[in-house]
Image 1 (cartoon, rainbow, N blue to C red):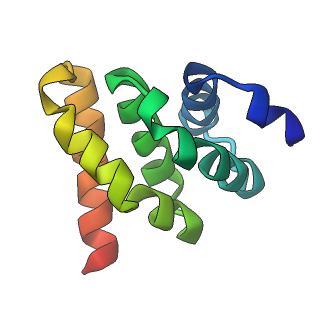
Image 2 (image 1 turned 60 degrees about the vertical axis):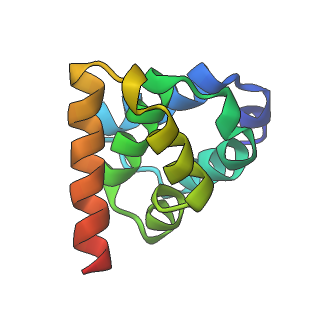
Amino acid sequence: IPCLREFNSQALANTVWAYSTVGHSSPQLFDKVAEVALPRLHELNAQHLANTVWAYAVFNYPTNFEFGTNPDLVRLIVSSMGKFDERELSQLHQWNLWVKERIG
């Protein structure tokens, strides 16, 4: 999946969101998107953030948990709290429940 490095932040978010929405499992894709997205978190807007973390929570792969609890990602979400709409807050709530379940 070498072309993912060429995707902008919206394309990365849309890709994992679409896979999750239709229930198409692809651990390799999600691993690669996490690898590409983590260094570029600052490019994600509120919608991209919410869609991305929701998508990772839906599939619940072990590497997804590492991505979903990345300190830089969590800081970005917290600093963006005033920018999320109702749907995005719902996605973040689902992500939060997933993280809490995994942490125990």
